Length: 121
Image (cartoon, rainbow, N blue to C red; front, side, top):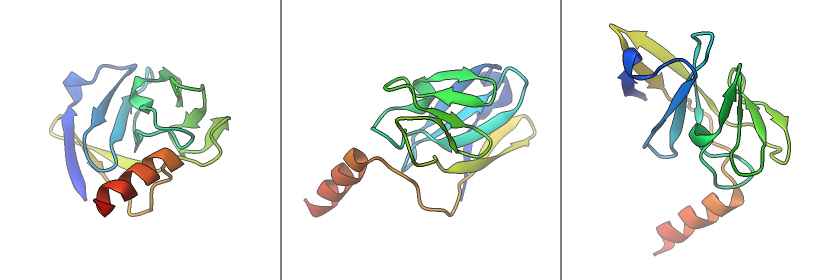
């Protein structure tokens, strides 16, 4: 599935945005001008990675300092153990789009339990 994110002009280098989809997606524009999209939820605990610290091609979770490689989703620093899902970013006519991955997300147990509870009610 392809979703619109924003115009490229609205996402300065070194910044990120959160897309409110299910699960949320974070789009990052690195200082080097590269664009990456990953699931916005840390795989360790429910925290927004778009609120984290961007350095090079890594984002640090604001909650417990897990680090994720934006290119691969791999964990670069614990306490997270599972990678985040990555998505393709496309630029067309100055607009950013995210092509969502078909892979299953690695959500933390707190998010899974909350979603299962919402389904059960």
